[in-house]
Length: 527
Image (cartoon, rainbow, N blue to C red; front, side, top):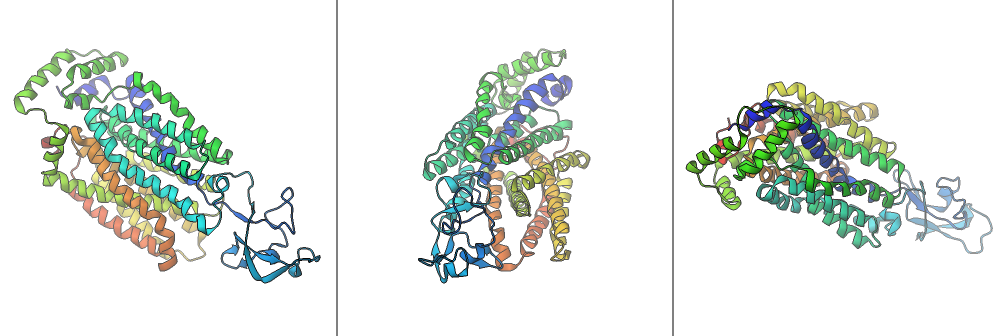
């Protein structure tokens, strides 16, 4: 039985798909934002200065006052020192004047005044001010990325071996548990440990949501399924930014964004398994139940008995090849030069897109203004990017992907033409690059899900994503590249990797409007 013809018969946008595909998978995608991005706000380096008890009291202290440069070292480039002050002259009764301090002796601060006293995060909670503690703040993001890389193989194995739904259910519920406990942390070590556990066990359920959505729809509308799931993730980004804007205290912030995750416990009873995965595992009776339920919900009458048709497929399949175990399938795929070369190209494209996407996102947060507002605006740019993919999808998958990567490279090189004082043009170019690379990412996700067989689909996508996260880990080094090689060097690196990825795309198969492959043999035959 041709599963794609069944999906066409029952419809792609009926009540069943909206509830069980787009809504359930979309909510899981939305919930991926906390474990991916919450550390950006909870470990943010705040704006603060030394508290000068000779000149102010805790109750009426102001971040900016007229006497600051008298009491605190000042640099034209770096501004006021955050952790140092001049030594007070004992017995001085001249007030906060030059004579009140010995400006040749600099001493460390013991207390601080914050620009926004209502902002509370792990820096204020665990006293991690000053340069000697900066590594503790940046370590949170680094460990989050490492934990996600290490967690990908586990979630991919569970997805391809035991089912898609289990990755989504356990990933969301464990993320809710560890995220909520993180809000109750009493030490930095406890916070970091829970951050790692959250990222490790949650890694992969976003990719799994995309895989599940793509497997439950006909070829003509797979672009819409991917678009909806990605849009829901963007809604999650905006939700995170909005909560962070109104709740600047890290504990309520984490409780609010992670608390709703308890609702995912209901997925144990309401979320169906992927029909394609069930058939690939020869669990035809369970697949027949879901197909019949889909037809009933969409008010469609099938002219044939689904259970009988699947039984006939089982008999035919059994006469062809025996069912292989997960490990045997992995070994068989590893022996295929075609699949391995495609995986290598796909992985390099993931690394490029991740490197550029996170690098551009980081540049957007460095723009003057409120961090949360800039983050929300940057996230909003993804909506037009995703919907533009629908217009480009008529030209296939790999051609639009190659075009987006090429245009992104051109945009990166265009930064060389912008004068140093062209701040508005530079901001516009950053937003344009974010828009284009977001389009490329959507096509890459869809192409990755379509080119690999059902029995290894999540494992292959996870492998490419793991390499992509290596590119993501390079993004925090962009300020270092600017320091040593100038502000244009990162854009040159972007352009080179983007152009190379654009060329490599043409060595991938075209998967638009093709049947999703279920076996390694079918995947190898894609052209």
